[in-house]
Amino acid sequence: MVDRKADRRTERTRTALMSAFVELTLSRGYEAVGVADIIRRANVGRSTFYLHYGRKDALLKESLKHPSSALAACARGDTTARMLLPLLEHFREQRSLNRVFFEHPVRAVCVRSLAALLEGNLRLISSAGRRRPALPRSLLALSIAEMQIGLVTHWLNDALSVRSDLIAEALVLNTRAMLAPAA
Image 1 (cartoon, helix red, strand yellow):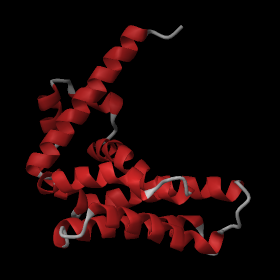
Image 2 (image 1 turned 45 degrees about the vertical axis):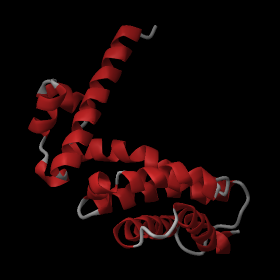
Image 3 (image 1 turned 90 degrees about the vertical axis):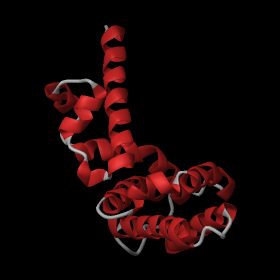
């Protein structure tokens, strides 16, 4: 039997930790935030933090799942440019705050997290009967992740005059082009 009260308490704690982490990271930068800062802001004990997250970068990886999953879906072929627009609009609207996610050292974690999701999608594609990619899946996934994060980063930093729908279309088309040899 599942203890729903414990599940709700766990979820509240994880939410508090994530909220504290994101707020602090956006205001101070990733490297300036320590576990002590996070637990103080979340109002939880150190042992509670380590019960849920082994390290600060586990929180970072968790915070990247939602945006990464939207980008990784491009590899499955069932994502349209229109589906990416809300994510891109969010990035653009919050660019002054969320730039930390597109800069060193966090950018590398973003790329690796996205690549891991892409690699999972590439396994699904292979098991669905498409040819195995010429490159190892891990290298192909990393290359696609670098392209996607790079395109979004440069758009946010340099070329905001480019419409978000064009960036979304480029993300979908470039991902498909990189996967074309595996089709």
